[in-house]
Image (cartoon, rainbow, N blue to C red; front, side, top):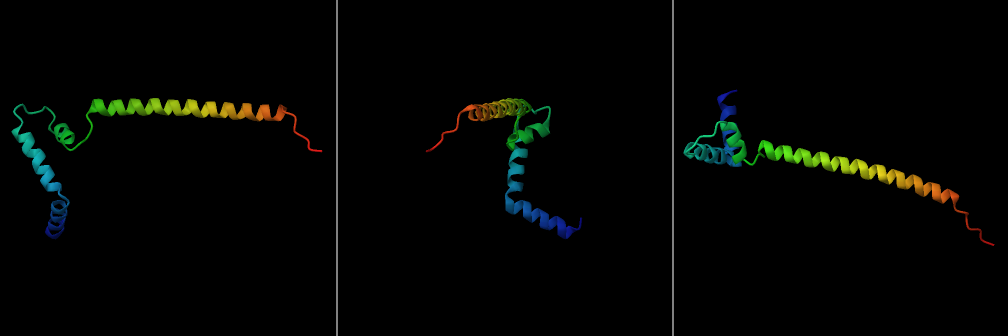
Amino acid sequence: MSESQKETFRKYLEQAGAIDVLVKVLVQLYEEPSKPKQALDYIKQCLGSPTPAEFEAVLAERDGLQKQLEEANQQIAELQARNVDVASREPTAKFH
């Protein structure tokens, strides 16, 4: 990467506010009295990333909702089949 590319990228990060946010997070980590064992996880959390427990909870919720959707789709298909069956047994109205 050329110096020109580096400078352009640095300006981009600065204009986007990324440098300020990263500096604030790093200062916060520096000032943390009890340093976390996983600095990267701490930084991710400060930037809004979910914790592993939160992520697992979201996955579990997604899986539950996916199962509910599958059950609802199955019930819809069963009701549609019943509806067709009932409709085929009903005598058709004749107009004179």
